[in-house]
Image 1: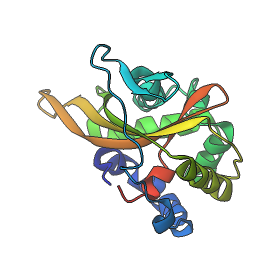
Image 2: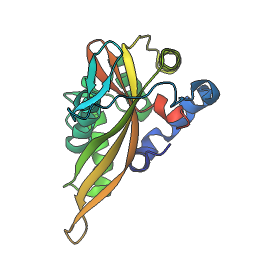
Image 3: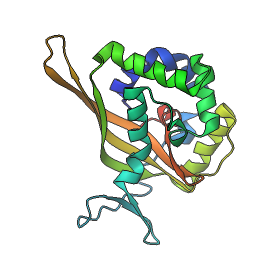
Amino acid sequence: MSNNKRKTILFALFSVLLFTISACSNKDDTEINATNSTSTEIETDTNIAYTFDDGTIITKDELLAPIRTYDNICSTGDASEFLNVYPAEVLDFCLEASGQETYEEYAEMLLYLYTQNYGTNFQLTNTFVDCQPLTEHELEKFCQFYEENMNLSFEPSYAFIITSEFNISFFDEDNSPMNDSDLDYYIAYFFNNNMYLDYFYIDTLDL
């Protein structure tokens, strides 16, 4: 899989972390089979991303909510909504892995990493492309990963692998507008009445 733009920015931060997590994972057991289930697009409502068998719908905005919040944190350094991106246990794990002591310091570090590459005037956006729900077995492996690596025992109601287009708008040294884009992959999972973001387990999968 390729999260090139995200990984370029965060490589120094997560290189050791991702290596440790990958070493604990068995890719053969956690590969996602795209043929297990397919998303149902309804052309009459362009915001519907998926329809479950019972008729319940998931919108694109719902699946994009955690990554949009994360983009805002990275571009502003405002940590006030960090707990809408990660559960507390996961965020604490991020703090320990990055050597930061507070959510505010972690948010400021993310902002610093982006400004080092794109200056102080940039904008991050993610546009929905596709989604793939995790099967019951895949969801079990997802939960097992978090319990083994981050000491988080939970049972999300559901989870989706999201494909989105990640775009960075910025200005070059001549103050000319520029755009940098790439496909971005993450997992959006619903737990404790909140849609959360996964960038850790997704990176152990061979997509």
